[in-house]
Image 1 (cartoon, rainbow, N blue to C red):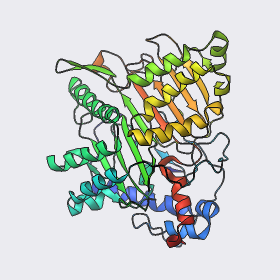
Image 2 (image 1 turned 90 degrees about the vertical axis):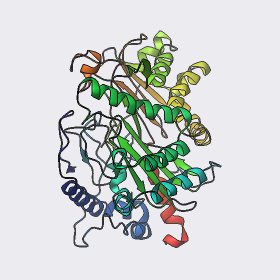
Image 3 (image 1 turned 90 degrees about the horizontal axis):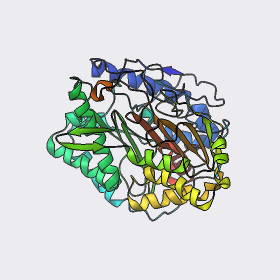
Image 4 (image 1 turned 180 degrees about the vertical axis):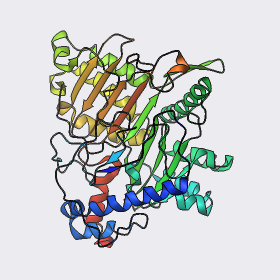
Length: 443
């Protein structure tokens, strides 16, 4: 396991981006070398050869590969912060027992219109200076995909909004608009807006502001070759993978502290849809069903299992199974998924929801905490193809912005939520693996 330097949330970021970049590049080299065994096991020499051209992570040929064994999960991963900033050597993905289910994801036509996002990404890259582009663009299989965090003080790669001119920012906004629905774009903007206002409220806009959000692009935007982008900052992480007309938008992290705030005479609220949908689902269950779904009536300050640096989490199914639900209850459960999936463009969301519906009978829901409208709670929705967590957390470094005290108990005022694709397809990695195995020019 590779450990990253850590900082307490709310402290000033460490100086020296050059030194930081060197550290991150070293991490990629070690990570890349130790992944050789897994890649060979997963796809053979052709897949490995295709991956070995990453100039940002070329390992010395003499580097010894770590043994490939069962994946290990992160240490909870809820905050993705101090004590949790580590990555395991090989990517395996979320599983129930360390064994991936095969044949869940295939390369096929979906009818999703990816031309607009390709055009927007190419325009964004063309608008960068040479120096900005060299620090922003990585190969599609780069470990940079996995080095994201929702913590404010985490030092990121790429180009931040603060680094960009107004014209360049506009190109970035167009890229987000091409990938996200109106709701998704509005949610992202609200997260940043509250982060700025809360930073002003506690007089710490150096750590909490609307511009410490970073762009990275993986690969070269293309209609035929795999590529993607990442938008990464405090309480907001979007990973977006594209292969032809297939899109994988996960992991995506959405959060806020506080979740509602008066800004310039307007009440700005975010992360409300997932909270309302979750409570509607649990309250649709009978008392007997709730006894199966609710594992605890109390809620800890942090319950998230698969946040940042927890790509290989192993978690058994728990709670109530989808095949034990009525038709109306299943619709309530689908509404929880739609709160997340609906942040992508409508055509991509439609494909994703069809995938989720296909496995609805094998979807499990686990709950902790209260079930009243204002209760703090944790919900996990877990199937072979989707993983969702909504976690009402204890007041954090922005507690002072809404009159709370850190450590005073979980609250709907501080929410972390995430959507993932289990069994190896986060970041589109399973599709990427299949592409290298099946494309003639990669063999």
